[in-house]
Amino acid sequence: KKEEIKTMGMVQTSRVRGQLPRDCDCFLQSNFFVSKMGNMTRDVHFSFEDVPKKSSLVCMKLESEGYPKSTALMIADTICAEYDRRLKLDEEHTARKLRHAKKINKDFMTIANFENGINSELLTAIKENDGKRLRALAQEISPGRIYSIQIFQPDFCSYIVQKLTEYKQKVGDDRSRPNSMNSQGVLLDEIPGATESLSNPLVEYIIAPLARHLLLPYKDEEEIFILDNHRCFSVEYDQFKEPQLALHFDNAEITLNIHLAGSYSGGVIELCGDKRLAEEDHSTKISVPNNQIGRAILHFGNELHRALPIKPPQHSSLCNDEDDDSNCAPAHTSRTNLIIWARSTSYRLKHGCPMCGTTKYLRHGILKPK
Image 1 (cartoon, helix red, strand yellow):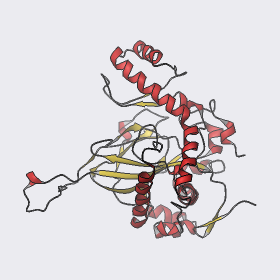
Image 2 (tube, helix red, strand yellow; image 1 turned 45 degrees about the vertical axis):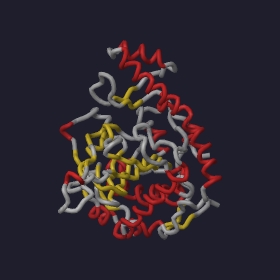
Image 3 (cartoon, one colour; image 1 turned 90 degrees about the horizontal axis):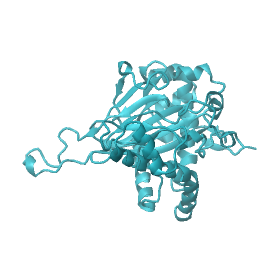
Image 4 (spheres, one colour; image 1 turned 120 degrees about the vertical axis):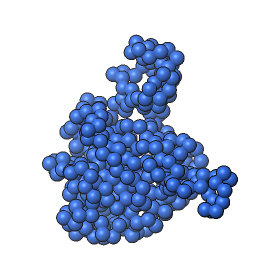
C-alpha cells in the first residue's frame, strides 16, 4: 500500500517525489552564470561541449573567443569553481541533510494544516475542480502562458519567512545556495519537514491543477505532463547585495514565484518570451509587478525572465515627517520570494531536459521511479 498523507481534504500519494539528484549531465557543462567583470559589458551564461577541468585551459578557450587575458582569467576561475561546486552538489546536499537532522527537530517545518494557508477562493475552486472559477481568479498576463494569482494567505507568508529565518540562525553558513545565480536564500529540501508538508503539496494540489486549467501546452500533452518532482527554494534580494536577477530561464517545466515579504519599489519581473524561439525578443517583453504578499506568477520554465532592481520605497526614511531628512537613515530594502521549479519526469523522457533541450545527457537511473 502507498503511504497516504491527509492534505486539503484529499489524499497525497507518493507520486510527488520531492527533490531528485541531478537528472541531466548538461548541468556540468552548460549555463555557467558569470556576473559582469573585467571588460564584460553584461552578465553572461557560458556553455561548453566539454568543460575543461583546469582554469588555465578555460582561460585559453576564452582568449580564443576574443576575451582579454585578464578578463578571461577571472571568468575561468569563476567557471571552474562553479563546476567543482556542481560536481559535489548532490553528495554535499545529502551529507548536509544528515547533519541537520541530528540538530534540528524533524518536525521543525511540519505544517499541521496546509490548506489554512491557501487563499480560500483558490482552495475552493481547486477542490471543486472548477476550471472556470480558477480562470476568473487568475489574472491573465499572456494567454495560456503567464498568469498572476493569489496563492497564500498573508499570515502564512509570515510563518514561512519566520521559519526560514529561524533555520538560517540554527545552521549559519552550513546550507546550500538556492541555485547558481542566487547566493541569498534557502533550499527547502534541507529543512526538516518542509518537503513533505509544504513543497510536495504545493506541486500536487496547487501548481498541477493551475497548470492543467491555465497553461495551454500543458493541456496538449496532459497524459505525459505529470509533475512528480521539484526544486523549491527561497530567494532574497537586497538593495546592497543582489538587488536584481539577470535574464535566464529555469530548470523546470513550470515555475511558480510567490512573493513572501519585503518593502520596496521597482523589482518588477520582466518576461521576454520562450527561450526556444529567441534568446530575447523585446517585442514580447512583459513587465509584471511582484510586490503583493502571497501573490504568485505562474509561467513555463522555458520563459526567459529577469527581476529588475529593487529600490527603497517612497518616503522610506526611518523618521517622522517633521524630522530633518538629513538626520534620517533610509529604511532597509529587501524582498523574499518562494520559488518552486515543478518538474515532469515523463515529459523530460520524451522531450528532453529543459536546459539543453535534448535527451542525450539524461540520467535515466535518477528519473525513472524505483
